Amino acid sequence: MSKLTLKQANTIIEKGLAKAREMKIKPLGVVVLDESGNIKSAQREDGASMFRLDVAKGKAWASVAMGASSRALAKRAKDNPNFFVTLAATAGGKFLPQTGGVLIKDKDGAIIGAAGASGGTGDEDEACCVAGIEAAGLAADASA
Image (tube, rainbow, N blue to C red; front, side, top):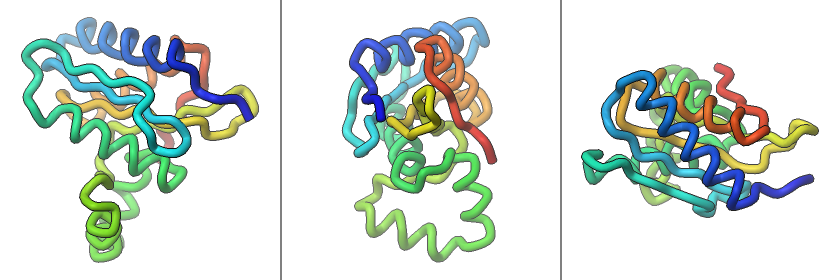
């Protein structure tokens, strides 16, 4: 299994933020985590609110922890809200199953991390993560 590099993580953020500017959405916070949920890189655009990085990290952390996009987790949470509230409590509040967290996979399909964004709608946040991941030459999994 390959490892997510700092260069790839920074590319994900740079290209994700460029996509946000192209889409003319509010200033974003973007966080890239490795396969163990550790921060590889994080940036908050000028004008982004103070919660942007926390929310972005929660989306990415939930994705990498559960091995599913945050879109898929949000769908699961609708059917089993008590379990997901318990997961969030167990994770010390780090777990946020809301659209905008995308798994990062290597060329062999192995999960090597996750990216999360916050600032736009969930769909906009997700699109920015996907754009950044693909620009870094990696596979984005935002499937539901």
